[in-house]
Length: 266
Image (cartoon, rainbow, N blue to C red; front, side, top):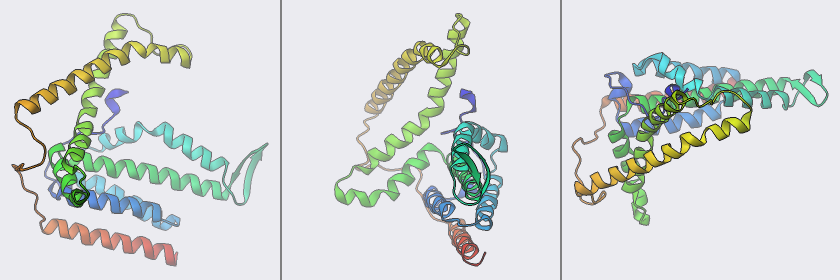
């Protein structure tokens, strides 16, 4: 199960998404998330789903990695969809006691399912095609105006990226601890919920100890390299907008116009 979590993983490549400026990718991601929630009918929803599928193909990342991303939230998707299905409004198609399935409930369930899956896929596309270093620089550049209010933008961007970067490491550490506990005879898959929760204690304690040790080692390494934050810091790789970035921005404008037109005329 832990190996199916792909959040924070980066895959090197030369696809179109890999060549996009990380700042542009973040801006496009935020814009597309807004568009997903602006869909008002099945046609505009299907249109955004096609764009998501196109993004997955253009990323050059194996499709199975995206499927693993969706697999980790299947329970959340099903639970949310069932709630919307049973507690919707509109014409009643089936009822049993206080439970009922309506046309509005079906519509809400479809929209919630497609929207959640689309969010996971496009967000995974960002982390799959953007290295942690580029992501840090992009976040810092985009949040730079907040420095006017004495907000330490560089430190915030650094913490966010380090947290994202260490997710795969901690998941791998968790998997190793679980395998070690199972080799010692620990039973983590049988019994009720209470028993399973208690079985996690021997995993959480060494995991927290390992996490604090890694954080301490990282802080020591940064201090040894005279890290002083973003003040006066130079970058090995400068970020520059290219023609492909402007084309991507124009494409997003076209997608936004398409969603708006589909909502109005269909």
